[in-house]
Amino acid sequence: MRLTEKQIQYGFYYFFPDDEHSKSVVEVAEYNGEKELTINCTQLNQSYKPKDKKRILNEWIEFLNEHPDAFTKLGFGTRMPQELFEAVCQQTNLVDLDIKWGAYSDLSKINTSDSFMQL
Image 1: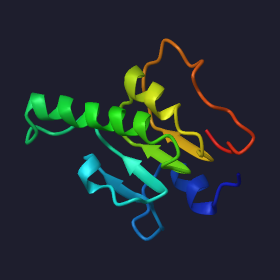
Image 2 (image 1 turned 60 degrees about the vertical axis):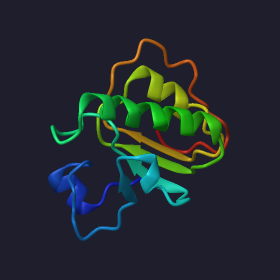
Image 3 (image 1 turned 120 degrees about the vertical axis):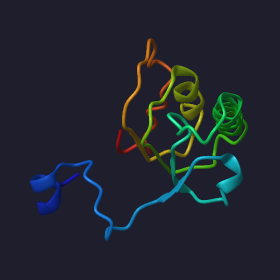
C-alpha cells in the first residue's frame, strides 16, 4: 500500500469528500448487496433510542454471522465491540478490513486467509 500526497499531508484517515468511498450505512436495511461497505452501527447520536441502538448492533452481528460470504471489503468508522469483531471474523471473502478503533480481549478469531490483503 502506498500513501498518496494528500494522505501524507493530511493523514491516512482524513476524509476527502471528492475521493471515491464505499457506501456508508447504519442499519442492515440500508444494505443492498454491496461487496464493499462502511458500517457505522455504534456511537449513534441521540436521535436513536437506547433500544434501537442495541437492535441495530445485534442485527449487524446476526447478519454477518448468517452471511459469511457477503463482503470483500468492510470499514468501521465507529467503535467496534468484541461481539461485532467476532461476527466480522466470520467473513470468508474479506480482502480488506478497516477498523477505526475498538477494545478487544481476543483477536484469535480473525481470518487471515491467503486472500486477505489489508487490515
